[in-house]
Picture 1 (tube, helix red, strand yellow):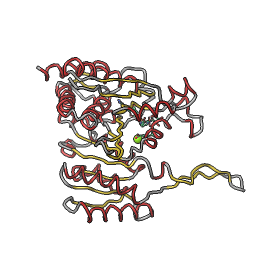
Picture 2 (cartoon, rainbow, N blue to C red; picture 1 turned 135 degrees about the horizontal axis):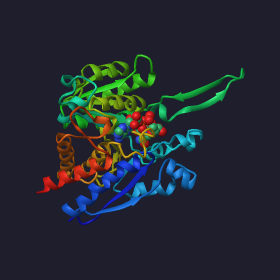
Picture 3 (cartoon, rainbow, N blue to C red; picture 1 turned 180 degrees about the vertical axis):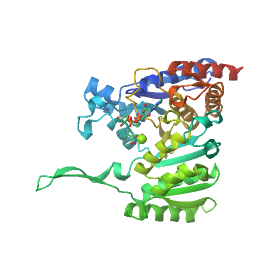
Amino acid sequence: MSAQPAKLLVLPGDGIGPEVMREVGRVISWLEKNRGIAFEITEDLVGGASLAEYGEPIRNEVIEKARAADAVLFGSVGDPRWGHVGFDKRPEVAILKLRQELELFANLRPAKVFDALVDASTLKPDVVRGLDIMIVRETVGGIYFGDPRGIETLPDGTRRGINTEVYTTPEIERVARVAFEMARKRSGHVCSVEKCNVMESGLLWKEVVTDLHAREFSDVKLTHMLADNCAMQLVRNPRQFDVIVTGNLFGDILSDLASMLTGSLGMLPSATLGAVRADGKCAALYEPIHGSAPDIAGQGIANPIAQILSFAMLLRYSLNLQDEAKMVEEAVSRVLESGLRTADIMSEGMARVGTSVMGEAIVRELDKLQK
Ligand SMILES: NC(=O)c1ccc[n+]([C@@H]2O[C@H](COP(=O)([O-])OP(=O)(O)OC[C@H]3O[C@@H](n4cnc5c(N)ncnc54)[C@H](O)[C@@H]3O)[C@@H](O)[C@H]2O)c1
Ligand SMILES: CC(C)[C@H](C(=O)O)[C@@H](O)C(=O)O
Ligand SMILES: [Mg+2]
């Protein structure tokens, strides 16, 4: 029995967010009952759900709760019903603000192919079998947050939309350090991705990563790649990569691409971490890389695995519950081996199930692993 309960802030959000989060709830109850782990859980509204109730995508009170928690478990935000509102009021502000306010700068997005899902990828099995890559995406800088930004009307009446890519040396260095440290625990290769051929921010990115490598991480292999080539290489031969470190926008796009190597966007979890504090802990938020999937929301067919694997990352990185994290991952693997598939990863001869049957099956596998 752990002495202090783990304080979790759970933010299911919009669309399929609450549906897949419900399945994590089963895993949490199972851990409480069978592993004696105590959780103190607070739930709140974010995104469109918060706009509907409070008129804003996230309240300061929720940001404060996130600061006070050991970890935040986030679902997804985004709702076409709020498509008309200004950028400061969109549901997506919830996740952007959480990342910024808690300075969650390093978003770890692992793309791992489960053996049972080799055939679910749209790529040939030989290309994806055994794939295990980690995309480290910078999440509080770059073109998402640079100034100037906005839409302005020009004297001739035409309009101009502006966003600016900005990166500073410390911003690049801290995320690169995370990538190098991660590579040391893996296969020892970092590929740094930018567009230094056209963007000054990309040139600085490359220089800073190269300098840091020479100063502190010369035991790690460092290569550089232009982002457009990286997108192509991820499809051509994804196993050439180990850790990819890149900026906010490229990381967003490349990780959605990488998810399809594993079979579905519904499979990819993520952890977004801040700087390590004096007590050795860091602020952390865990979320699937997918969104609120309005096209399938409310139908009970979403794949809950990305959300459940995000919770496994939480167990590993924030609570240091290595055994339990492995158990959850193993339970997912066994359920897939048993042939159960949500619609997004369905293939011939497999048994198609909905969100909650998938969640229940994962918990049943946890039961078997415990015995
Ligand atoms: N972190 C987040 O909260 C987050 C991430 C991405 C997108 N969004 C938001 O979500 C909304 C919808 O965006 P989108 O449609 O471009 O991307 P999306 O990730 O929501 O969905 C893309 C496609 O993948 C499918 N999909 C996604 N997750 C799935 C799952 N778990 N199981 C089965 N299928 C799944 C969807 O049905 C859809 O066809 C937008 O408002 C966007 O801004 C939020
Ligand atoms: C919803 C959106 C702001 C977000 C992003 O672009 O970072 C999403 O696409 C993600 O991948 O987490
Ligand atoms: Mg994205």
